[in-house]
Length: 234
Image (tube, rainbow, N blue to C red; front, top):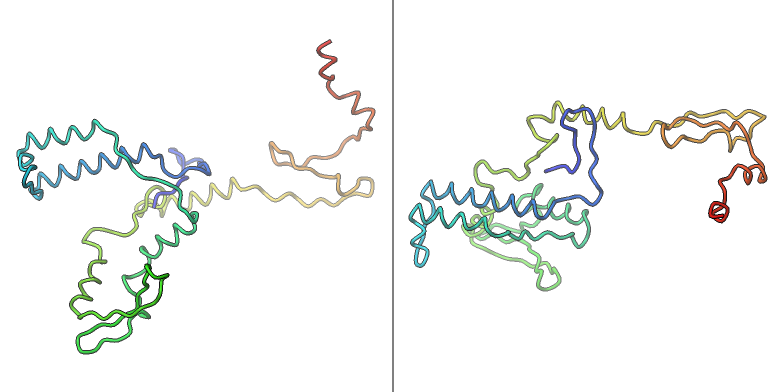
């Protein structure tokens, strides 16, 4: 999980992200290309890549390195677009993968004679609920496909949410956000000489109260107003 906003480099102020910011498409494509090529290099050094047929020449280290260099001569395409249903639907979709197991208990119907029966939704027919029966071995195989490999986690947190730093940065974040939050205006008790509705305004620059010290008539406002455009032109 990567927050769009965060603390400044010196941890003295909070930097708010733009409303339209999520990911820069070009930056993501270059990072993805670098990570992908680095993984290919690492896998090749561990002798875990197999080349067959027309790709058999890539098994030679020099030819493989030359082929990898060509990958950086082209821009990679990373497909990014807005979710159809908005951010709420995207979070709901991701939440079903990060905070749920492969199958919940209420979908399990029976276990008898080495056969597991469970409910599933047929998306090809308007999500109708149907029953499926599988041998125990096949059911366990499908279930184990959803287990993460060793060392792989579902959610990785970065920035002030990182596990190593959030104990120190989260309280600092709360402190800076509370300091930046607008303070409630003091309740003023109107005096009999001044109408309550015109007693206080809030200064847009400092946030302090503003008091009425003089009222001008329409004629006085006209005299104090800037000259009209045709007067300046003359």
